[in-house]
Structures are given as structure tokens and as C-alpha cells.
Image (cartoon, rainbow, N blue to C red; front, side, top):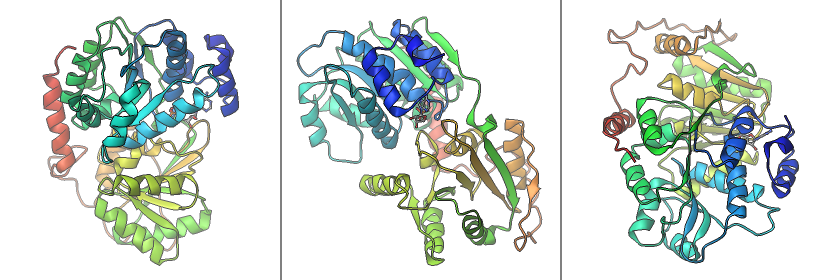
Length: 416
Ligand code: AMP
């Protein structure tokens, strides 16, 4: 089915042609007509599925067709879990809106940067406001924004919003929105808390399920390489040098490990940088921009980079440390093999992590052959699984506790 069959206006079709999208992705084919018809939407869609365009294009069309209201009003509100995703969606909106006869004002607001410029920018209202919940609450408390004329609400990566403990903020924000509105909810996964949120928020929604998760898409070749933990950096270096990948995203478990591994790679003469949540917003933006532009070859990151971030033509993701959960695995490896490209996901398996990786495989119905690389054959033997087992299998860290709190909170999620 071509884009022209979906009911989109000529200026939007022009922007799509400019992006060189030849056909809609499955989520676009199903969501665009439903949204244009004014339906609420409940969509299970991963990043990489083209979901941004799936809501952005019809939203822009509806906004440009509807009358404006002068003043400090916001017409469409897009709530997202992270600053990076907010910036990325803002960029996409501007691209898709390029040829509209009357410009639409899009603003992106998030925390970690000064609030004053955002307050100033919001002075004249916005057609589309892309926001992280915490900063939006701050702006509301400063009376810098009015949500009383919001006609369209999008919750993107709703599962992640709840994971990060934004349930209370969402409740406060949604309570300020008009009853009469179109609401769209996108989520990669639908645990009970997200179901409850969706049920409370959406009216007679079109339920759209895009079956293929990145983890199960055939265009990501998944590999499991056995290696002793202390030799992982050396192995990584050899793999990168042999394959000559132009860019490599490496996931590790901690902030410390990002710096440590990046540092070791740099000392070995490779071009590597670290990305984690405790860098300043400016440093995060720079690290990501350098990687996206090819100025950094290897980015060593925590799970911060696992969700929503779109890095064009990323050939390979390496799980230097395994992800804690099967869902995190999906998100991490979904950074590669995007938009029809092929990708490689490499997992390093060492004595302590065999059992954990088997659990991840089980969740995804996978059984990857174990590889060994000449010169890196492991000498350490498998450590038996802890008696309690469980996919996380470790003492709860700060993130686990946050999640648990988020889950406890969402069990009490109010009906919006
Ligand atoms: P998203 O899932 O929204 O993060 O989009 C993933 C990537 O797919 C982005 O780089 C988009 O520019 C790209 N994309 C979105 N729609 C299409 C399409 N119909 N054809 C090809 N690429 C697309």
C-alpha cells in the first residue's frame, strides 16, 4: 500500500518523499488512517517500527486543518520518558511539517537544562509540545503553560514512562486535560500497569498490534560468544578491528563501566566515548551527536541508550554486559537492524552469565549457538545459577527499586 492511499495531505506526502520512505511500515499503515479519523489508538509498537511518523504525520494534518487559538495554549501534547527521545521527536515533527502551508510551532521541553528559555518560548503557546513529565510539571507550577486546550495527547513509550516512575506525574498532567480529546498510547510492552493506564486514558481505541519485535526480526543476526570476563575488552577490540564496523554501540551495566571500557579502548588507539545518565545534558547530547555523525566509532553506554534512540545505519550492538531483563534485550538489540537495514547483535557470555543468558533466550524462544574466537577461548568454568534464579538474579539495585516503586504505584493508578 502506498502512502498516498492513507489519506495524508499533499504537503505531508512531499515531506515523506523527501525522507525517501517508499512505503508505510505496518504500524503506519494501520495507525495513520485511524488517527486521521479521530480515533483513540492503543498501539503496541517498538522503536524502529516507524511509530514516530505513525502518530506525527496524522497529528500534523489534523492540527493544520483545525482552527488556532491565540494565547498561551498548547494544542497537542506528546509525553515521552527521556530527553533524547523528546529531542528526536521534535526533530521528526519539524521535518514532516516542512511543507505545510502554515507553519506549526513545535516546542521540546525537558529537564536537566535551564527552565527560563523554555518558559519564554512557551509564552505564545505551542501547536505541539513534546515534553518529559517532570519538566512539564515544573512548567505548570510556574504557570508557563496551559493544557486546557489540548485536543491531542500522545504517550510514547508508555511502558518506559511507568518504569521510570512517572505514574504520579502522568496522573497530574492528564487531570488537567480537557475530557474531549484524542489520545494515542504507544508502548513496546503491555504489562498490567500499562494496560491500566491505557484503559483509563483511551476511549474506544483502535487496538493495533504490530507483531514483529526487533528481537525476533530476521534482519538482526544474533550471536553469543563465550569469553572470560577480564578479556572482553580485548576481544571487542579484535572484533571491531577485524570487521571494520564504522560504528559500534556497546552496552555495559554501570556508569563506571562505560568510562572504564571507553578508556581502555581509547588507550588501545580506538575512537571511543562513554554515555550514561550522570553526564550533564550537554555532554549526553554531544556524545550522541558525535556518534550519530560518525565522529565517534564506539559508544559505550548504559541502558540509557537502549530505548527510543534512533541511530541510522548502526551495523552492530554488543552486549558487553548482558541486559538485566528480556525486555531490555529487545530494546538494546533493536538499536541495530532499523528501518529495513540488517544488523548484528553480539552477546558476550562469561562464566557468571551463562545461566542468565539462557533465561533471556528462553523468554525470546531463542537458542543461539555458542561461539568461541581463536585466542579467546574461555578457561573459567560456568558458575551455577543462584538458587533463587529469576531473570534479574541479582540484588535489587536503584533501578530495580524504582521499578518496584513504579509498579506499586501503578497498581493504584487512578482512572483518568
Ligand atoms: P521510529 O520507530 O519512529 O523511531 O523510526 C525508526 C526509523 O525508521 C527512523 O529513522 C525513521 O526515519 C525511519 N522510517 C520511518 N518510517 C519509515 C518508512 N515508511 N520507510 C522507511 N523508513 C522509515
